[in-house]
Amino acid sequence: MVEQFIGTWKMISSDNFDDYMKAIGVGFATRQVGNRTKPNLIVTVDDDGIVCLKSQSTFKTTEIKFKLNEPFDEMTADDRKTRTVVTLENGKLVQKQSWDGKETNIEREITDGKLVAKCTMGDVIAVRTYVKEA
Image (cartoon, rainbow, N blue to C red; front, side, top):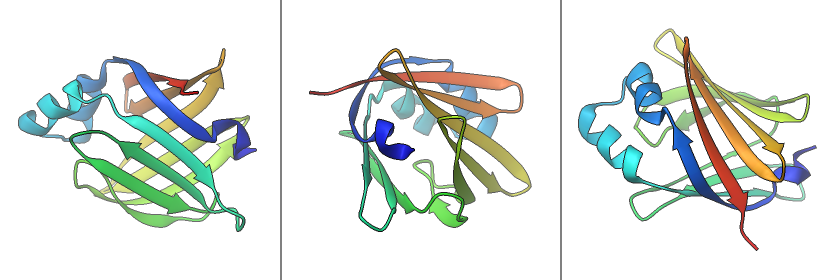
């Protein structure tokens, strides 16, 4: 289940993220900050099965709380209002964001002890990799 994702994850690499941000419509100034920011990802689950994904950096901290398979309204770090649903598919945490007739997916999975987040918008894919902090 979600347990393998629980913990504090520190970003160690980010590939093609600028193109991904462009594809979802993020403006130049916000992209400049987004490219320089190396957020920690903190994943927790409470006793009621509510998952919390917190992205924490010196620039901005965002947090979403959700139950798997239940759609919710999300305000993203770049100020998009999306209808989001997170599912668990083949061990991957899959976040689908829909807004203004568009859709993007963020697939998170554990590979070789690292958390790998694959962000997809159309044919643009960014990969962000995190290691677990002790």
